[in-house]
Image (cartoon, rainbow, N blue to C red):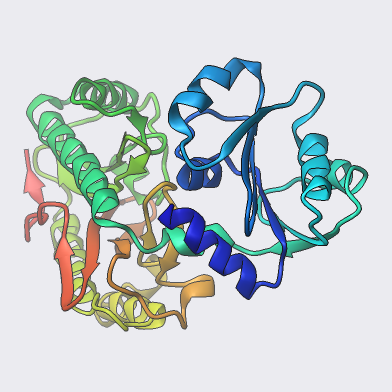
Length: 355
């Protein structure tokens, strides 16, 4: 009931009578429903999970705090009829998710005024409960075990795609529902690509390998990055690694309740700027994780002037990327606590690991 209570409080603060949720992540978060292609209608007195016959039995088993109703001729028009039935005059919708097509269908099937909301449920999701933190920690532990597996099995001659596929299946064997996102294995010159997907490139002796991966466990995600070398790499990469490690540690040190996203961003960038690599670090230094791989709060963009709070789980991920040579990123998952922070992932080595 706590989630519905929080949603209703947010609705009241936004001056809306009803809220229509269609983002599967938000629908699942609020209602505990694990299916998709469904929606949730919430008023101050009613809550209805709207789905179809494919998910009828699943919904009845999982959804305890909302009525379950089935539609047969269209999810969005059905929800439009529901809000009219409930007498709602101002109805919130998820402006970051609802398509124009669905907005058009909804507007034709309700007399209510449609009010765009921005991250109403997502804001609630930023503060993790103890149960959620436990699930994220399990996702981190699975990912960490996957990394140890990679270190024990990777060798020259394998392709990046082979390493990624083996890691993905290994984590599934440990209980992961899926991977958090497409696993990134970028070797040699390709490690200078911040989001270089796993390719058919053969990993060679002397390559630096950047591995960015995560496990999905019971709806919650982890997100880690480690960089290591196969054999003896370009000596420049040992130096770069030390600077990235320093930036990672300096950012972690300021990840405490009340710290602004701006402060985290500037801390990570200042360490790398001072080393002379300012132009080679162009992305945000961290972001929230949970039900989504990128959620609030974060270290840049709309979160620059937002203080982080106890219960947030964020990444700490500075990097340096040298085109044509290679790149280094070190990414950890960090829980913000009442009196500081707790690193959920094991600390990366202070020196570039040579396998």
